[in-house]
Image (tube, rainbow, N blue to C red; front, side, top):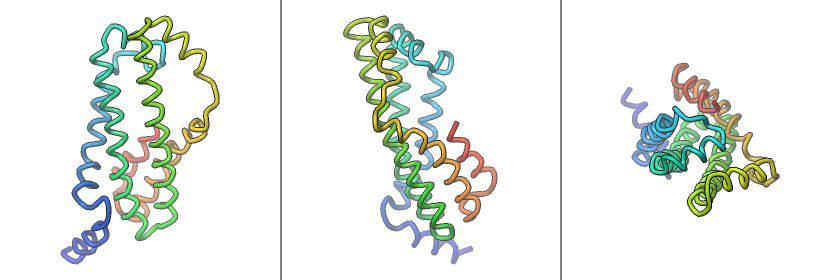
Length: 180
């Protein structure tokens, strides 16, 4: 057991390190859950989100901000997982990590779009914002190509975590459920 701890410690001494990586593994999912719970009573499709922002701007701003912070904090958490998984399953670590990290960048981009839409509600009104977002909702952007990556990335990372014995079956299943 002591030798395993030394090996684990030596494996994660590089960036992001034990503390940043470990704390982000704990804090990021908590922030994401709080974000979802804050707005769970409202429909998640954009017209309803904009209408909710119009009536509850502080609630929605808090929820969306916690979501973005959670996504940002997932980056060091994923790096730690990739390092640990890659010791025994390097391909699963590489591809799972790459797909999730690219997907995190796409999520950050979309958080900016959400913020912009909320500002339209503030500057104009909810109807203008809903029409504006509706007009642009299906338009192509290069970031849209990346949306699939986070979905598959969580599954690949979960399989890698299980097969490399970084996580047991329950934690691996929970990690894989991030694709939902």
